[in-house]
Length: 205
Image (tube, rainbow, N blue to C red; front, side):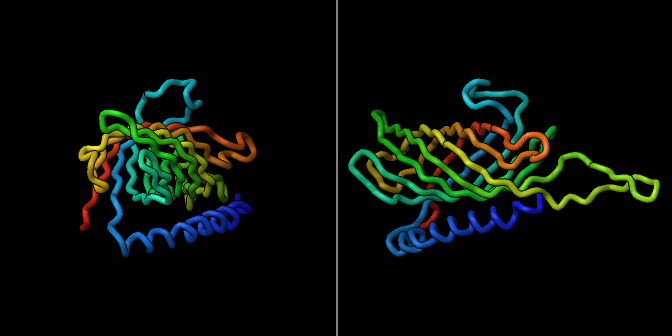
């Protein structure tokens, strides 16, 4: 696994630094929204295993977004998100990512979006592991494992004040994603899905 961290960190930091300039530019003309989500993570085949899988594995995230391009009924959006999830039988992970989404307004104050995302995921064991040392078993240290995260977020939501550009939003997001590498000597990648409910609001004027 030691060959991956430098590559992953360089790739991800390049993307995040590239995202910084539009964020700073928007701060001069208006505040950014905050997006809060609660989600359930699963190791599953996207769409094939159904939208809701059991048992639930809890996660939480916080993020923001800004428009790269606007039209009367649509916009291109970039977002930044950080979060955590806990999958008891597999791992717990913290992640930081960015995504690009195409969003389209729908009737009845609804909207829908589809996007592509990339992120950095760092996972830790959820159970103790031991190694044999000098004839006795000792607890293995867990510094975590780095991964590349690739996602396809699908979202539908409701604009609570549809005539306001700063409208709060309620949304549901289905996010298939790939974790790479998962176990290079056994399984090179793992598919996951997140099913999330969220709320977006503007806390600052």
